[in-house]
Image 1 (cartoon, helix red, strand yellow):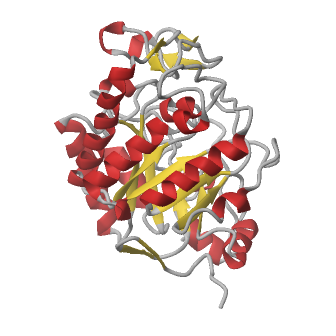
Image 2 (cartoon, one colour):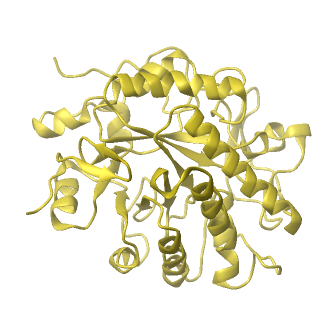
Amino acid sequence: MTASLYQPVRLGDITLSNRMAMAPLTRNRAEEGNVPGPMTVEYYAQRASVGLIIAEATQVSAQAQGYVATPGVHTPEQIAGWRKVTDAVHAQGGKIFVQLWHTGRMSHTAFQPGEKAPVAPSAIRAKAKTFIPGAGYVDTSEPRALETAEIAGIVDDFRTAARHAIDAGFDGIEIHGAHGYLLDAFLRDGSNQRTDAYGGSIENRARFLVEVMAAVIGEIGASKVGIRISPVSPVNDSSESHPQPLFEHVVRELEKLHPVYIHVVEGATGGPRDNAPFDYAALRKLYSGVWIVNNGYTKEMAEQAVASGHADLVSFGRAMITNPDLVRRFQENAPLNELFADAPLYGGQGPHGYTDYPTLG
């Protein structure tokens, strides 16, 4: 029997009501102290009919921040704010993970404790920008290379954040191993020119990510831990000479730890799916857990991906922003809302473009 996008599926110890997921979507709406506020509670509760919500990228420490008004999960106030979100989603019958990140070199001294340089595998500035209130879009700061002895502390930041996420009521966590942020930057030869145990060979460049995954799995259990990867996405100045062997090694190492899912961005994030050659099927054959795919999936593509066995779940980004009831709209072949032209995707004040997208009557 072929699977349907609208059928329940097991994810570790929980059952999802369907095979659609809300991708982690940075909205820059956190309140003072990088705490999720009341509108964030409403925003996620509105979308609880999707099988799995993966809440937006969330800092594991103060050092991990790279953008304005992005939430953390490293202070008591942040944990309490997220608890209101998870309670609201669960009250609607939904399931919710949170994505844990460290932005690495995708940051600016303005966001760093003591206005110090951001940290990275190597002291290579990313060709990218971030927004600073009052200054507008500015180039990311030149980072400093992490000392070998510092890496264990960041591994521990992820482990502690995973524990905090469970304390906040999340059903699990997703490690952000994609998009040029710290873990992904360590993977890639375009951003990692280290000569210690965390640089050089593929095995060495993958070491940090594997250590983080082992730590969080050791803390909260493999059934509550997923990871997102983006093998060929060039976003945030990401580059890698040989992505196929790199990510096949990563997935082989992940299979040993057996996280509950791997979430793969196919192609260029938010752009063409065929920007670079990559054999995703070869990657999937190396892993026995739940496989989630992302990037530009339409209703028809998603239905086919699940029915054919290409994926167990499909995650949706902008369609989930604009359609809180996306599952129902797909099932009823109803038209989808478009992004409001007069509301920002990132940031903004008040509900417009955040919690006021219409649902079917």
